Image (cartoon, rainbow, N blue to C red; front, side):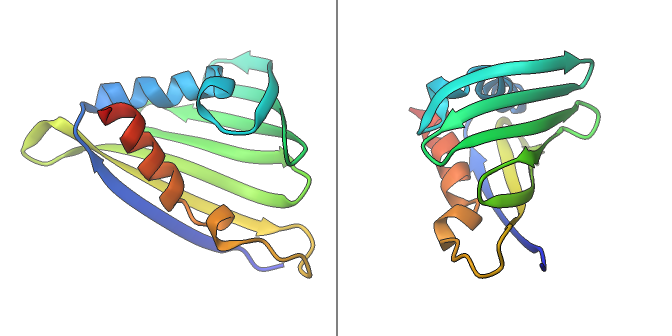
Length: 139
């Protein structure tokens, strides 16, 4: 099984802190922000690490979320997923010479568990997530 890395970036017209707070909010309340989340629970929260369970239209998902404030990165590692394996990283950076804008980059390193299973490009591409976050924060 080979891993595919895909990334997408977008400039959002809000501060880095606003984007950071929004991503943290989506971690703690995914049912409000992520389509298809039927139920969720924080299974464990210690320091910079959260283990989260979600019941979705696709199935049950458990992920370990690592929050690295120093690097302005949040990593989601799939521990249990019906179809996929891998990780997703949110990187948040200031836009040079514009303190009222942030650059959000999402890096996906996902792959299908079954190499014969066809996973659609929209699932593997992070473009949808960055654009959704931009829309949510600029609306």
